Amino acid sequence: MSDKIFRSLLLVSALILLLIFAGMFFSLSKGAVPAFREFGFFGFIFSDKWISGTGQSTEQYGALAFIAGTLMTSILALLICLPFSLPVAFFVGEYFRGKKVAGVLGGIVDLLAGIPSIVYGLWGFYALRPLIQSLGLSEQGFGVLTSSLVLAIMIIPYAASLSAEFIRMVPQELKEGAYSLGATRAEVIRNIIFPTSFSGIFSAYVLALGRAIGETMAVTMLIGNTSRIPRGLMDTGNTMASIIANQFGEADGLKLSSLIAIGLLLFLITAIVNFLGRLMIKRHSV
Amino acid sequence: MENLNKTPILSLKKLCVSYTPGKFAVNNVSADIYEGLITSVMGPSGCGKSTLIRAINRMHELYPDIRISGNIELKGRDLLHINPSEVRRMAGMVFQRPNPFPTMSIYDNVLAGYKLIGIKQSRHEKDELVESSLKSVGLWDEVKDGLSKRGSFLSGGQQQRLCIARALALKPDILLMDEPTSALDPIATNLIEELLVKLKKEVTIVIVTHNMTQAARISDYSMFMYLGELVEYDRTEIMFTNPSDKRTEEYLTGKFG
View 1 (cartoon, each protein chain N blue to C red):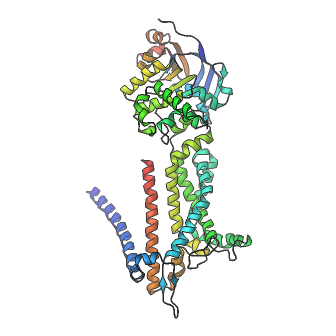
View 2 (cartoon, chains in turn red, green):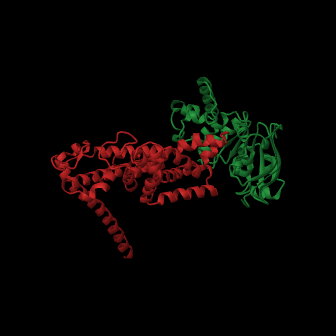
View 3 (cartoon, rainbow over the protein chains, first blue to last red):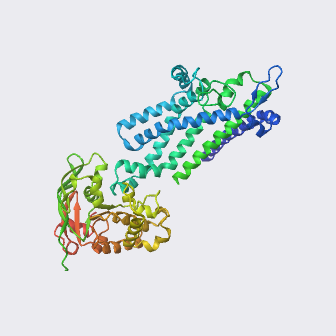
């Protein structure tokens, strides 16, 4: 009897979660309909025009500029994060595994993951932006590169600790097999541990990319808020997340619908990227 | 009783290994291992038999808290004072569970000892080495049409023979085997036992085994270890028919262990 009650309780909470998910998807889709109806689904996605329609000009909205901004910042962030997070992962997961120094470093890395993104944004705004300015890279210090640098720092802990997990999972017997053939530590890491954990590490970076794509606050503070495709790493722009954060407050009508449509696309993209990442992890562990 | 070769190839002198100070997993073991023979190491769990053979190729150095003292000489070379990589290439090792490298093909697994440390070989040398190594473990006919397949697709027994081939490809002086058949079914076990008897012409074998009948079937000399000590070391036939130590007799008759 109590087992039955317990089971139905579990079922109800699971169903509620599913309903919330479906409801979110439904209301986003519903809110996005006017924009898609006006510009067409693909027309909306592939247009880089974002004109608010003041005075004479008619309103025109498209997501391309923000999709481009999102891809540029997140992929650049991933590239910047790679040379830092991978060594950390090997340091913690293999080289100094089980030692105090790895515990301390791993702890600090995990701590970085817990810092609220507004703090990263603030740091980027007051410390990193002036640095970019003083290096003469850009006049205002805002832009794709500044955002990517902060994004990279934000995803390092995520990529590093997940990769370290996969590096740790490489069976001891494989490593011993390689050592027994006369391989050195570096050779074992390069030729056994890295190839064996590669697909897991790859999926860790896909999940990190998913985080970078959806990250909002820090990017909103640093990217410069211009509604066009960035013309370079020093140029300003907007990501899908930052355009919503920057403009939802004063938007209504077609503009609000367009922002919701971007939200829906962002929802889908992050869902797909996360799904792919998890799928790869599943296949890796089989 | 046939006369066996008594040329020592490996000699252990007062070998002690400890995981924690003052407690010896291997306690003052001295023995000569003879060339071209199979020597089995028996004893109950925790008697130090695995620790003993892992000290020989210095695998214990992978775990920082292990201390070792005494002397190990292989073909007159002091193994504790040369580069561990070189030691491990002179003394090959086969483990309890087959461990072919899952990211490498069968072909590359055989050559792993060369590939891992970046030794370049010509295509011809490689082909020849792969063929001869796989032939010597009786795996050539079974895998020659699928050398580019992953080693992990083979059956457990085939994987273990692949691991033996991988060790043999380095032409070691001695092959250390740590319960190599304990994860295999009886048929695969049988095949490997027959193989070892053939292989001893090429390479001296030291095999740790839990399986007394296995030791009796294939080994020429047997060691019995108990609580880290080498209790008895003699011709296998003598050990099994007329052991000189009471503990050996009790172990062999199943009174403990």
